[in-house]
Length: 488
Ligand code: CO
Image (cartoon, rainbow, N blue to C red; front, side, top):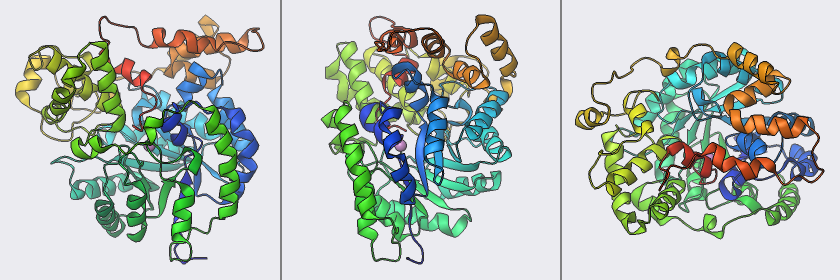
């Protein structure tokens, strides 16, 4: 056994299929391999949260809570990890603290051990409530820094932020490089600095979108990172994580030898090769994305821009929009480009180009961002732009969730009155995705044909993303459409 083995979290049950196959892996395709996965000795298995919750109900007719309980039963010896978007939980708005409390409580009760919590703006106030709830209910609070590049986001900035998050109670710090922007030598340097300044374990999450993921993981391992994220090879690489087997083999016989058994990994990979064969995987997700290296715009965001421009019959404006993105980002104080800010900045760039005048048309979400409704923007906002977008509206400087009244009692009453669901878990599903959950309960709780034609799937896009003609530029609609993208 190596003195300092590198620990591995495998993302095969969450980010891998979210990034390559629109989160469509079904529970029945996981269950047969759980005993084998459980025997491998991973630090944790990421298997819940992110887009899985929404997709379970919307497209797979699965109860996400039931999925979690089944995974827990099949994986008694491995920590189960989930991804949580801070005060947004798994939804697309800020929730009241009592919803955060109830959601975290039920997640841990039903089987989650490690909760990775992040905020798109890296505003510590947006993760605070979730961190204290995870600790209160006995979970492991892993707080993520959303990695990005900008004049504000220096190495020093991330080190200071990590120290603050450690003080807040983080049990580990994750460098969340959702767009694979963290280059190998920068990873080495950042991890070194974090190891010098932070006492809790450092966990690296990257993707292979720009083709540098394996090198980034390896350099981080050299610098002493404690845990890295990989995915079993059948759903690895491209917009997903680097392959587990490649990392394990690379480190064999070194001081960072993971100790994982290649034969077991290969046996698990054989199972997922069959599963991957059933999933709808666009070969494009495996290509090296050079535009991201050039423009530092996440891969998922580029495909969103293209689809928005297509809808508006303005594909010829692609490069103009691509150049407008960094300008909007600068005006808005350099938010990291991750859900939901990637959609907000991207859509605004499209509006700026298509309307022929910058900020002549401003989306509701851009206004919200500039009013401080998503939290504090990392850099200085262009005040001229802010004035043009929101006039004399008040800019919030408090923690956004402080302005939200408790919601749980109201939600419980609403569910009871409408006869929706029959547990606290159901109320939480409803809290996050009211329309999708209502349809799902209706299907689950009433007699239905044995082979349903996924009613939620057929009706969902219209319900979730009301189309505003001619092009729906609503960032919310785009988030729902873009459940792939390697943006998480
Ligand atoms: Co990810």
